[in-house]
Length: 261
View 1 (cartoon, rainbow, N blue to C red):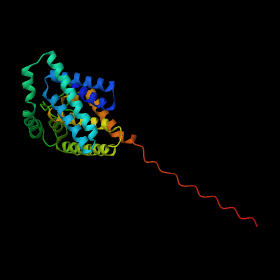
View 2 (view 1 turned 90 degrees about the vertical axis):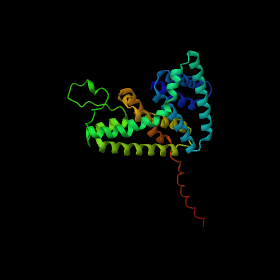
View 3 (view 1 turned 45 degrees about the horizontal axis):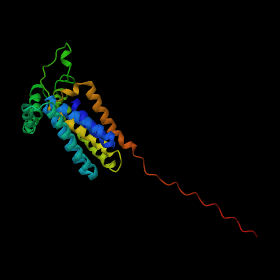
View 4 (view 1 turned 180 degrees about the vertical axis):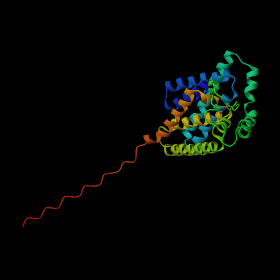
């Protein structure tokens, strides 16, 4: 996750800078690509794919074609540099075959960790679930009677802790949040801050997609806090747009002097 976030955040920072600073951030993103390649986690590779696909789709939606062209070139540059470093350190045919199955297994993973996990949890935990914290990472260290949970995905954990009412409420909240973020991007599409906001939105979408398969990372206090901070920055960005200047009303003309008799 840290390597994937390095790629995404470095890419966002590269969009904000020019010259040598941009090259430095792109080099940092290439180091992150190498880390993702060596970590052996297909969901992290998929998270980068979702990030770049979301970034391209958002740029197309708002007609930022110039930004889109730079985006494609930067993606190719990061991929080429990361691949060259990977070849230098040593290729692995087994690792490459493993990563090539990412798209092949994505459909089954979404079904197993999404719909099937919700149904299985409902049969075990019932309509209202086990209760808050029962499926959260780390609660196994609390010496109390608690159900044995197996849920790994985000939907399964939500169903286990919140039950059907909480899961429906979370879906409504997530939909409202996404709609509000897209409205912010629309309102900020003609500002210099837009590339940064589009990048932050893509980062959150990528983490959300990863959480559909595995939500264990969100039990880390730093990760949960950092993603919440990025969400707050994104929501508050619209306040940086100054309202249109309103001309003050014209002062009334002084009364005309009376003509001398």
